[in-house]
Image 1 (cartoon, rainbow, N blue to C red):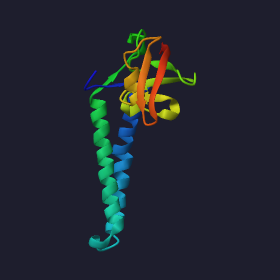
Image 2: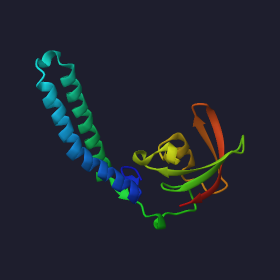
Image 3: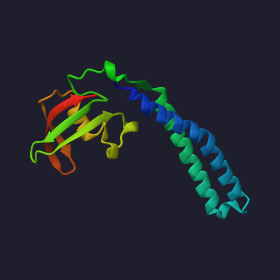
Image 4: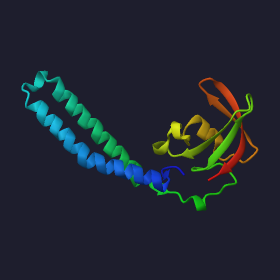
Length: 157
């Protein structure tokens, strides 16, 4: 799996739309902000100009990052994914063995991770700890609050 960014079709389309928006509207707005700041006089003491140039640099960095992610993207088809073990795109229901609390997460690529939507990165401590496990397995996961033990309750898509 190394080297590829495994994405859902939805995740791929979302990143592609963001990239197009940044390349068109984003670049136009950045250029306008620089031009407006430049018109305000002496560039050596123009904080607005410096901020506009920095914002442009951050925009170009994000565009570069998105282009890299998309160029190495592999769209995963859920029908082709093995449900016998935890893999990218799997929805995994885990049970905390200490307090019996259950939660379901979907394992996704870094660029699709969204904790509010219960999508965690395969590169996160929990994601790494769950990958490759099968139903009934226990996973010991190092968290900032210490080691937690989870039992894999279910794997689905």
